Length: 294
Ligand code: NAP
Image (cartoon, rainbow, N blue to C red; front, side, top):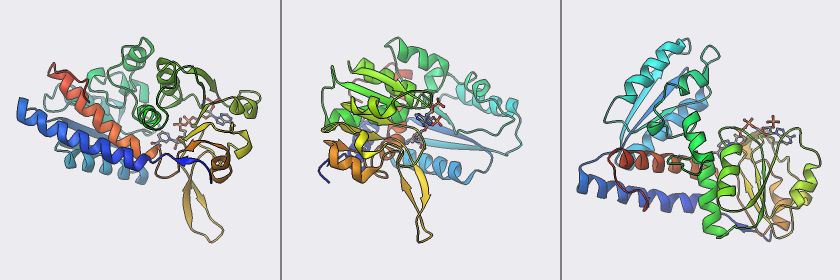
């Protein structure tokens, strides 16, 4: 392997320490304790783990953390009532509704009740619009994690060709906006795009968020390019055990790239810390404080 490994775990650990210190300062100087509330509907085991980890990290940083767990057959109005109550709770600055929601509940209907100032996943239409207008306060966690990794390992990306494969509201669209705001020349690809290998070979920065194991082949990577693998896919090995792989064929890509994120230990490590960062920012904005150091 010739590429530099982009160590998301190390960057995330440093950011976590910074947030811990900033939270302690905030408490001492202003008596302000950031509060994160999670809302989980149903008993999906992966979602339960995600929510537990989010509450645990919030507590480890000195935040107030509250979890609301509704049954899988909860009605949409019940979930909306929980969100509305959290909207008006002054001790809560960030509300995370764990997705996906059960089929009887429309995600958009729940997001439409969420106060954008407490939308720490940045999924509401208001926050998507603010990002588009260049006035974002809260930015989607995984795209923000990617930008922080690029800042650390690449520096200025102005004028570089960036390709984002995937156009989800959660990742692809906000990631493209952030890359554009950083003055990259951005192309977005999706399942209907033609000549994907050719689009990839042009990319100085190739960002894959597809959800297909090892889909991006090594010889699609531009020699000397940077590869950011957002995908998290569980695959079965020949020995019957399972392991996580990304959307990029890692070993072959690492032979051509200048730098590459591993899976696990790359982008994924950043997401939860960026959620904490957003909660701290939301608390500071609510108190009218300057967030530029966060
Ligand atoms: P998603 O909503 O399913 O979107 C997948 C995107 O990939 C869609 O835009 C789809 O295109 C595109 N796509 C599918 N097949 C394709 C193909 N053959 N060629 C080109 N594009 C194709 O997924 P997501 O929520 O963005 O997540 C993507 C991956 O990132 C998943 O593995 C997920 O687990 C991972 N993820 C990781 C984190 C993290 O913390 N690291 C956070 C979020 C997501 P269409 O729009 O045309 O269907």
